[in-house]
Amino acid sequence: MPAVPKIELAGVAKSFDANHVLKGVNLTVAPRESLVIIGTSGCGKSVLMKCLNGLIRPDTGSVKIEGKEVLDQGRAALEDLRQRFGMTFQFGALFDSLPIWENITFRLRHQQALSKAAARDIAAQTITQLGLAPSVIDQYPAELSGGMQKRVALARAIVDEPEILLFDEPTSGLDPITGGVIDRLIIDARKRLGATTVTISHDMASVRRIADKVAMLHNGVIIWAGSAANMSESGVPEVHQFVHGLSEGPLTNNWTIDQAGA
Amino acid sequence: MHGFVQNLGRTALNFFAALGHVSLFSIMAIRWIFTPPYYWQQLLRQIIDIGYYSLPVVGLTTLFSGMVLALQSYTGFARFSAEDTVATVVVLSVTRELGPVLAGLMVAGRIGASMAAEIGTMRVTDQIDALETLSTRPMQYLVAPRLLAGTICLPFLVLVGDVIGVFGGYLVGVYRLGFNPSVYLARTLEYLEVSDVTLGLIKAAVFGFLIALMGCYHGYHSGHGAQGVGRATTNAVVSASILILIANYVVTTIFFGG
Image (cartoon, rainbow over all chains, first blue to last red; front, side, top):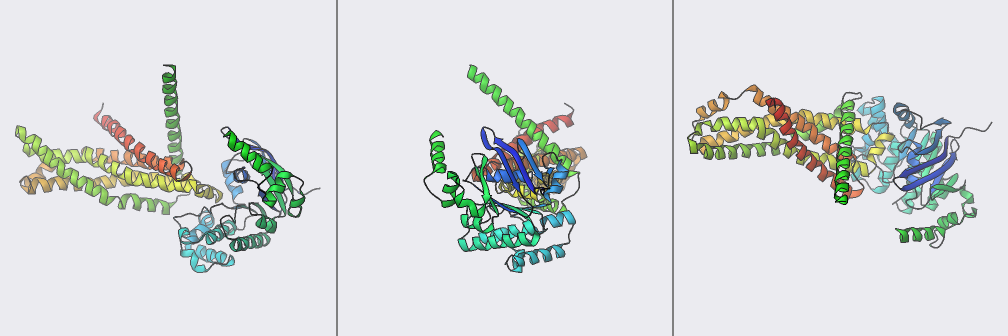
């Protein structure tokens, strides 16, 4: 009997007014698998990711976690489900008004009534694992560099050891060396937690490092999914153009037509 | 003509849609005020921000308003030899009307804008989505403490503003217009009733709720980018100021019995 996928999307569609962002996405992610979603800017990758943990409700389709439908659940059940997720956002989304230790232990503090001393200890331990000095926990997000903010966001996502990790462009805006460090931290965290991960990325070097499986979203549907090793031989012109960063090809042609029609 | 009617109809529909949105938003927020868990730290932070840091601006506004009121009413009443009613006019005007309205408008500018900007920035930088992913309800964590703090703090601010405004009138009355200090104080208290003060405080509580509601509502539904946050901030201040003036009339009418 085949294992139940950790995440399963079937026919997921979402529109914002007349803008049909997702037109029927089908996708499965196996337990402990690392899926990376690629696609051009604005193609709906972040919307798709937000559908996974119920931040955005699809208009139609099904989203299942371990075979259980997410969309049928009430608010309380959805909140319970979200405790199994850790998520980082493209621009960090750290809480400006809170110091780093409160950012990292936010859920633990509010859900488990953790004491301040215990929360600070946990934050210091987690941040040390991610290569930052423990003294960082008393600083505020605005005082940190982009790379440090990404690490803090990662710390917040993994601190309560979730089963599923969602990373929205974890290396965007970082230099290649810092991007490589973040990738290594993601791989380490995933191995340590035994988590299933879904990552959005444009950075092909990063995709090759962290992906078991890659899926390309284009025109609201998944046009190709396969192993990271097979990306270059996908046989799909859009994937070929994206993977090799070519300026000429079907993605650019579509873009030109869209712009002209706008 | 057809276009005019169409525009009028669309404007009316948009108005009622917005009214419905705000009403639902406020009902949800009030519900979360009374539902655990309670975010005491957030509430305390808001109380300090609204109640403590607004004191200087409210104090200065009411002080000078009380002083001007004493001068202006003296000028008017001197024309029919009723100068000795200046103290009574100052205290009744400040407690029933000027204290709550001026404090409300000043706090709307300071706090309404700051709430809309803070929550709007959180919206456009995904911090509100981040709260949801951390199993925290943004309405309960961000909106409910602000509404409660606004409703609690404004009456205290107005009470302090009332005292300062009356003191402003006293300073002008005694040192500029030559009233006897003890006579001025006696006149101040002679016709003042508890209901004058409580009416002002009830108004203040309503204004505090409306200011926080508009700040949170416009911030929560902020558009994208810096422009969206800027527009939310402007809308919060303008709508709160207009609602304060409307609510002022409504509350006054209710307590005058029509």
